[in-house]
Length: 236
Length: 342
Image 1 (cartoon, rainbow over the protein chains, first blue to last red):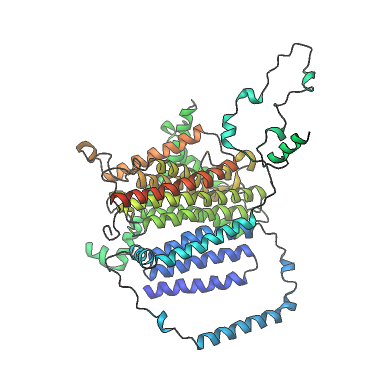
Image 2: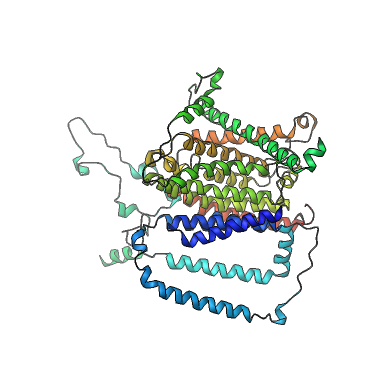
């Protein structure tokens, strides 16, 4: 029974992995990738690693693939142009693939483990659940390596933020506390207008006190920086 | 009889089907009456009568709506991706049903009492975004697509704080099993010592189920109806059912994580006579009432405010609270041991 289930999962996994690279539509590719993740998590379940199975679904399917799909859906792809240079690039692609395959075969045929790297697995208390056992191993025996991994990821995250952060202000900024602190009197002026007259002394129509550039939060698009403003005042 | 059900393959399959039906049939009836409850409660809050024509007190309204929906014509827009267009509502609906396998309605009373129950719930609820995203893309319509994108960004954002809230509950329980999570609240429900986390979770649950005031993915004033604008008939009905089933699921998650699941408020005589499943149903109903109450009370958030709340307020706050919980449990020696509860 378990073998049958394994073969079902494995077959669908391999099929969807092939479909990921052969599907014409990139959205279909990502959806097949998600199917592949699912079947991999099914294989984990059969192997008794229920924690890893759930984590695979939460992290890869629930977060990473959503962002993939998000980006891929917004691509505007012309399918006829996609096939255009196929004949031209096919030999080059075949060469690169062939070299990589040859290297892989060479590497695996001469595979040797350094004696220091071969360790006996840690003795785990069999009464623990998978999750608890994994926690014991990671957080007590390999805490340094685990923290180092976390640090590498943190550096990658900060790098991504720095690369995409624009210094140039793109839109209007807002400070919530400032919005809450605003009173009616700060923004509105009530004028009693007698019949037949207008509010010509206010420019013909009423507008909130202060122009956008005066009341906008510093750093918004088009608003001069506070220091620049002070300098101008000094110059005047 | 016992021999047949527990020790033969056919018997086990029959038993499993019966167990599944025992969960799903009440759930679907519950969804039907939840729509009625929503309309009635909102009507009462707005000093109206609500549905009162079909059956006594409008009790047959839900079935009238269902029949109307089924007999309508299914329209598939030209240029839509047919397979994915029809797949999306099925995905949403089946995910909303599948999650119920692990919800315990009594001590050990779940279809599947698995070790990593809470992770399973988190995994299934994080998949819910695909139905919406696929529906938005496959409709080949800009309103649907915008709704789908909004939903995806929103659900991914609030998943993070939901995850951190769950982690701080798990720190106090020491197990990922939903049964153990409820049993750990025998003395005090987690909504009292972790009140801020309870509030964060309730608000995140509103955002996760795309309910008001976070119903931007279907903002009818700017996106017509959001991601399901092109859907009609049974496909629309499946989205509708899935959404309401998700609401009930989130309410049951709130009940299990913070309101003591099937446990009575106090372990004293008249309260303990009420059976556990009824307590769970009371708590779920209370949470659903709060969901509807919020919808009738608060105006919709602006999109940038929604993102700000998720990333700049809830995420740092729940992260801090999680570290604080861990520190407190460690300092007082109350940290449950991994081997203790299995």
